[in-house]
Image (cartoon, rainbow, N blue to C red):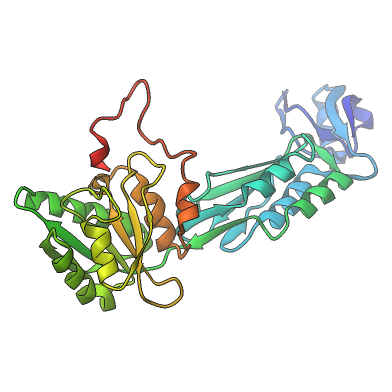
Length: 338
């Protein structure tokens, strides 16, 4: 690509590199110069413009951005019309944004002229929300580089996993010192979390904070639930505590206890017998009673979007898992808060 000052009389086929507003004439940056623009420039007394002329083997910025965006787009993503070397991708549903970060890094490493920016992985998105943008930095890019970028974007590394309207079962365990308002607060917070996904609390029970009664409650609500959430009257502190013991006595298993997310450290993930990996059961940490983001959201969102969560997935949540502890805003409470 040739870039620099160009006499107006010789500017046919040049891409304008700097907007022009002169004597009533307005031409935008990135506009292609043709006979009409040349006549307008000459009439306005402009003799020279700053522009770029494509050479053999190069692809225009908009065409390049569009082709790259289409290569990136997986399920439930729409590709916008390209403009000024940029092509945006948008979700066509509410769900969880999924990105293969290694692939995006590989494409961005090819050349400085080709860039992709995305939202953070596993972020909640709504219909119409922009999740990524492909931007070509100069006015054109070498076709060989674009081909390499498209080849590197194997198997469409961006997609949205749609939320599913799951039936949620909830068991709240009780102790004499636990206020009923605390139980209601937890249910309201869960309702708010489920609303964007269309999920609903279909059945709710309250039982003493003991393994036997909790086991019985799990068995009663199991058939009417796709996902079960347990709000314990006390934080889970060990795999032999009340909540994990009840899950196992109900015929289930504990998949993982604890997580590298704060707040949310004391979350427990289990399952009851069922199809595939079984029916998920979340032993909610104490912080899940609050609507503020915490580790509970990390797990709940994936399950609502049909994404399996295993022990190794939780172990990988540490980067970005510190949600509140900063110098300006130190965390309050103790580890027992979950």
